[in-house]
Amino acid sequence: GVGMGMTAPVSITAFPAEDGSFQQKVKVSLRIPSQFQDNPPCPTDESIKIEERQGMTIYSTQFGGYAKETDYVNYAAKLKAALGSEAAYRKDFYLCNGFDPPMKPYGRRNEVWFVKE
Image (cartoon, rainbow, N blue to C red):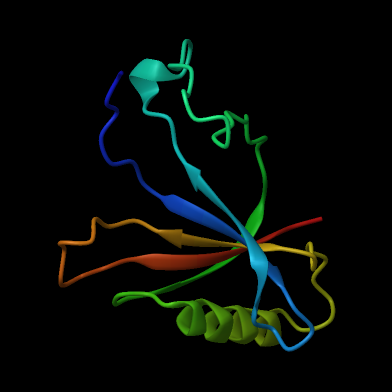
């Protein structure tokens, strides 16, 4: 019964298929606002889980607009190409992040993150 409002970023964990597209399985994560960090409200929907994300080092790229799956896939491919074969990062998933509410038409910020190994 507690409303927490919009948080940023909204983070989607993408599990890429062989061709780079998203597999059917994705995981959406929302940041719990600071005032609820120590004692978050318990979800009433059993499909919602509270997880603590450990600190990480990432490789990142940023782009604007209303992001679609194809945008995230394309920017992930560009980031992969920019990193080359020398960078060590998780290949089994990457994070797609949106920082703006849907009603913001201009100056939108989206990012793709690869987690450094």
